[in-house]
Length: 130
Image (spheres, rainbow, N blue to C red):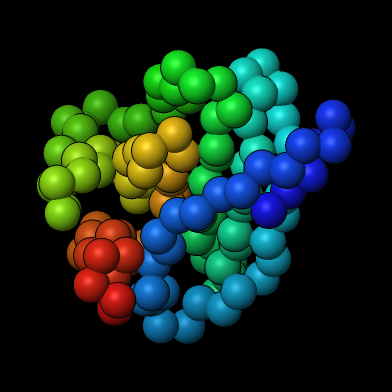
């Protein structure tokens, strides 16, 4: 739960990966209240040597939520990866694998210097517990 500038509490309940690739350790978690559009963002960083995995959950305060984030990607096609009826959009940007999906009014992103199979395994672990 996060208390915003108006003193109102925002709660974010999301499913998170139960599995993180071997070698990565939790580095930090940040919680921010952002504007344009109004949202609360939770960022989790995992590191291993010079490698980084970032997991971002952005809860949009507006009741008429629609994904508003624009993502940069390479020229490769975007894959739709359906797990438990939720479409996850998988793509590559430079040297990072990226997955984007929604859980209700929360936009979810995993991005990192990981293999495509590890990205899918992280997604699968959200729904099967690892």
